Image 1 (cartoon, rainbow, N blue to C red):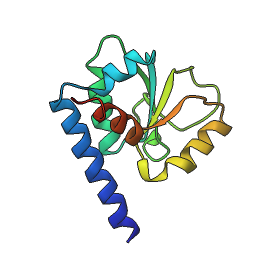
Image 2: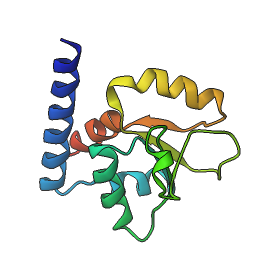
Image 3: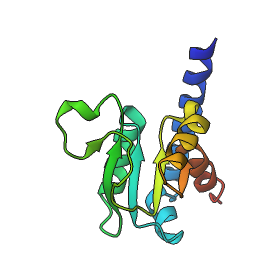
Image 4: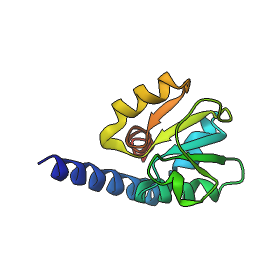
Length: 130
């Protein structure tokens, strides 16, 4: 049941994300308008990789690093375990949407301030489609 709910959330997020792009809206533009230029992505499974690619194609934004406990040991220097003392970012975007509340609590305890769920951003961006 829990896995089914997680897959359903994933599906609806992707559908809204695609509709946003088709409607001429994108996450990168939303972040730029909100004054967010330096970004960290939390989670580097499918959604994190897609977001990294989208944001990486925009000159005005920079993904400084990716936070992922399980992938930090794989040798990619951009992927780090969540910890204190990392460079400041304007926003951390959490792509592990089903665990957002727990992750936000953990990141807040580590000193991060601007923590957003990818689902909330996609919902906001898709609400702007005319």
